[in-house]
Image (cartoon, rainbow, N blue to C red; front, side):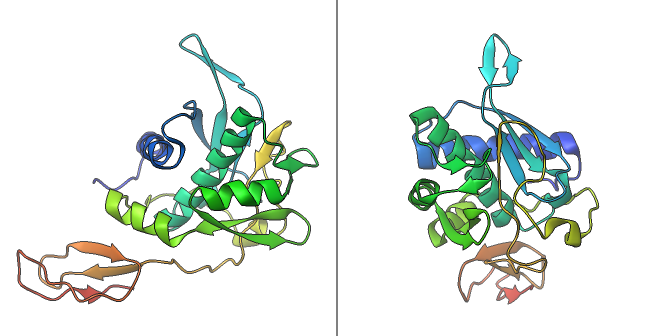
Length: 220
């Protein structure tokens, strides 16, 4: 896969990720949204609580992924996207998963998120909003071969540290704030010292490159 260094390519990658996550976790039943890339200073992303876009005769939700956080490890970006997809699932099935204008995430959200590939931690003010990828989701991402998005709109991490209400968009449900500005990736990267091929794993491995017959070495 080519490096994702253009906004159009980044949006296209996120659209493909949505389709694969939709098939894997929701039996392909979620309506496809418009995916946008906008800087949201204190949230990783949000989904609108109604179908605000009209496209090709259809009304669609919008899922925004903050352009300030695109260059996080791909498993974290996928986790944010899946977080918003869980909100979409709840809206489509009539599950009330938030309160306080979409800011507070209740136990219904936690239950659905953990059913659909995420692990959830509690935020004192914003509820069950801190999501991270489960081991099963990490394995799925590795199997798909998704690569990190090599771009991001500059924003100080200090601007991300307070709330889950970044976009201030009326009627939107927003992904919570990060656990830490320096959260480490949950996966390990390995590189062939001869040809430079990179692979990922969720645990320590000993793998030989079949082309070069060299043992992969840890890249991180």
